[in-house]
Length: 115
Length: 109
Image 1 (cartoon, rainbow over the protein chains, first blue to last red):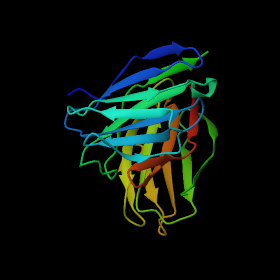
Image 2 (image 1 turned 180 degrees about the horizontal axis):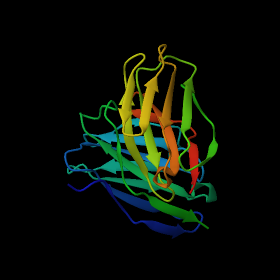
Image 3 (image 1 turned 135 degrees about the vertical axis):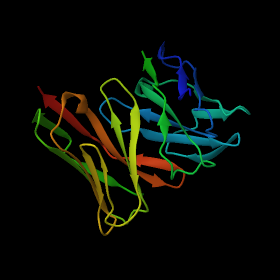
Image 4 (image 1 turned 60 degrees about the horizontal axis):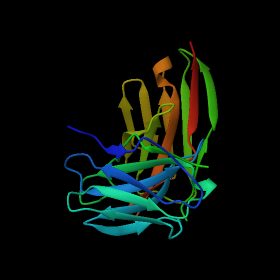
């Protein structure tokens, strides 16, 4: 049973560029959430996708956008990258029609470095 | 918004000693989740607590939810080097989780 898979594992981008991160949820999970984790801090919620729509959004600017596909996989796009966007980006999936009452399964993350 | 304070921020213990991390909220919680993140790894779900005063055990780990559902704790008995990592409490808020700052556990062999 495959867990949550994310790609790429590492990425280096230049300020002002755009980046796309990808996530495939665990088999049987229909909801995908994205989190940003800065070094030494807890994960911060970016947004959640369910049934191909953004269901809830955290306190992140519009430069952060996403998409969910019919097969439940998801993409996170960040435009006009800033140095402060350097972080570990985590994708998490859970079952139960998106209910957060179930524990999340996290992927290994994408380490983004903006230079 | 809902805030959660987690203490201590860091803890060094000798292998075999016990360890406890606490999570405190200013508001009553519907439930609380705990995650472990190994160095260089990703958060792994440990448990969810729902009922007032609930106590759950997983081998050497004991999780408690306060009677007022405003605090929770994770206690590890007789730590091992494999327990190294950061332990996070997380509060469900709508469809998102709000994570505490985490407690980083370091174990000296």
